[in-house]
Length: 128
Image (cartoon, rainbow, N blue to C red; front, side):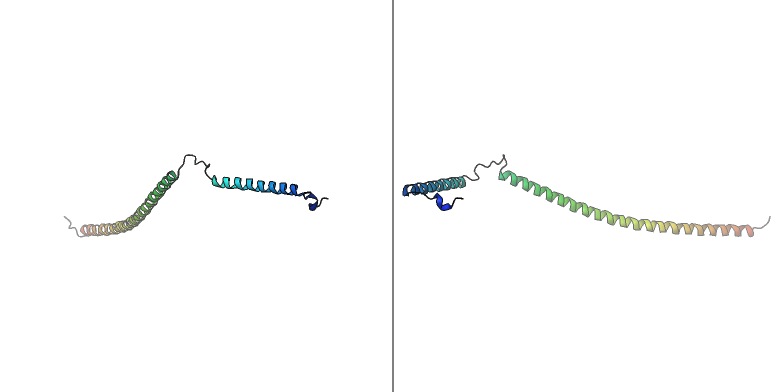
């Protein structure tokens, strides 16, 4: 195999030529690198969408989200109100059912009283 020291220049002019070639390559690389950094990001297209458009869309989305949130809060409040009304209706229906039951008992008692009075009238009738 070859040793690294086998590839060294034979004379002073060749060494200077190699050194100048390496310096030229480094200068060309640095120039290209710096030129690339200077122009980095300038060729990126925005596809017609600007930052202002994005901000406007974002603010519109935030407004829609706030409207939806307030609508949901109103719906929850209305459902709570409806549940409270349903509870009151159920209480009133129970009270009405109890009143109907009490009225039925009173009707039965009244019918018994009327029947008792009719039976008394038949027993105490004078014969003609």
